[in-house]
Image (cartoon, rainbow, N blue to C red; front, side, top):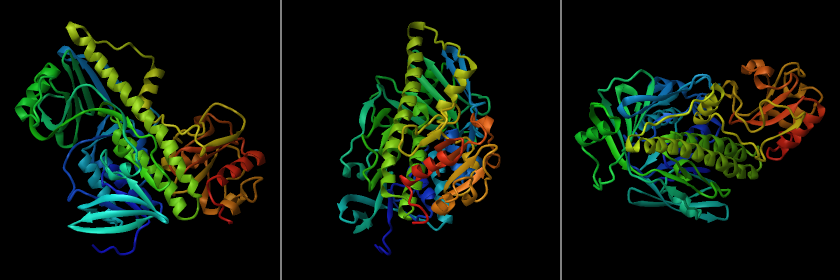
Length: 511
């Protein structure tokens, strides 16, 4: 194997987490080396739902158009009981995102879009290359690879583990996926259904024997989740006829399953590692956490992991940030991924609770919710409520007011150009021109230079009223689109506090 110039960053695994991490690293000026033990891309459907919060991240990464062209929008979900009776309908309308829908497409297509983007940037995936060992080295990490019967030992400053639940990097960190496995066994499949369905609509059907989840896919296909019969102990997957009969029993109607393209048995888990990083090695996606697919959040947490580590790692590699910045990945994403597990667990328990209501001929019911609660639930499911509040990378100064808070997602972050930090000025604040002209902090621009851009809130599609903050305030938006600091108002004292906050992890440009 031709080693060539040794890269600084290795990514193990070319699934959604690894590929999006590579896309984001390249966008931030870092070219990683991507290793995949499979010899070719897979054609499996797997994780299909991309949540609104992640669609915003994909837009910011310059990739949204191929996703929107390839995927199917799911704007609402119908919850049905025995006899196909309607229990409730949930909608994504009014969630406060430009994407008021989930986007559904097979995982193989998601990966193909990311690979095509990387190929256009001159970054290839090394298929058939397996990482067999990752060991500490005085200057970083020593990684042993095997490909085509040959062994290579290479050095890396950092390794991102995105190889799934059985990846080698987690074992090298002596981490385990602790938690629990849900009761029952399940089947996931990709097929066509003759059963008519309203457009842009998913369905969850519950009955006394279990549930069936039917979600639209491109080309008129459907993703199907269904629980197996307890007496079914076969090792091999069901035939098309057997799966169709099972789904019919769960749905209580003939769904007309045909053209089965892919089917697999699986178990549902709620598991996570104690730490996602150790300063040199970082776990992304399923390598660090597993959640119930009923929540539809596993692949999305992987995208968020990738976006978080990419901007931090790029700043450190450029010498623009202190290496301690990388410690925040495990803290921030550990808390956020734990939140994802909680939400997925809530949805899983909710569905199974309705199944239990059906036993003995009972009628499942959902208590009515007021509009505010419905909106909050939809935002939670859409991952728009993810927050890094409490992290050392977020803070604030000045008046303690309600409104957009440090650690929250900046609602218009996808409108901010570039890959650096942005200081968004709300309303009647000092002139939002070059940073060096920013009000009383005359030295601000010379200290931070290209690390930070100042923009008027109106240019970012936001005003003070929408942010819930008084005019004259300023918000620091991190490269990942989350609020890093809030100054209320943006005066000499609060800007000095912001300056001190930035210096905790960035290296001043003047240095």
